[in-house]
Length: 183
Image (tube, rainbow, N blue to C red; front, side, top):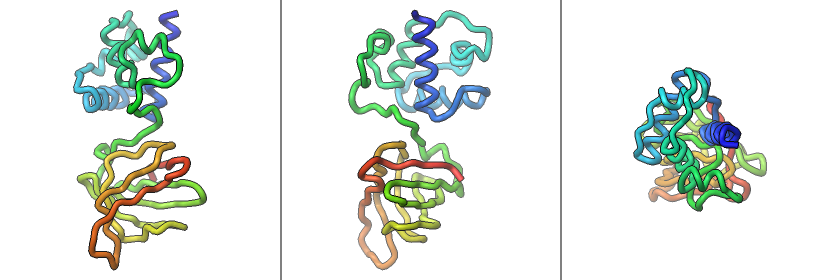
């Protein structure tokens, strides 16, 4: 039973991170995301063993607890006995930590009905709209954003639009959330 639960844990983490763990770079990224979210150090070597990338060893319960906490559960036992959603306030969907983007990277945001917005990352959690369809945001508008979470509304802060002197806030995908893809 525990091996099956560990396999499910691995899949849940891959879904949350938005990629399969296949290369050393993937495990380094996961170790960094765990540290950013929990302020817990987990070596990429430990993760590689857990995923079978290196010779697997039976993981310690403390390792499984850190991974369960990364998913939003109190500990490994809570993950094993889950009856639905994890503790409130934790992200389960595919998400993008914008600080992992390189300046100049472009992301396409979409939401219902038929809204499309391409944005360029300018660094320091700032974006510039480069193209938009069927929305109030126009090319040249700039805004701040810390993370993009699929299936959730996207909250923009310090939105600066042409012709407006005051920065404002803006919500994209209020019903049904947003989708994103790196271009």
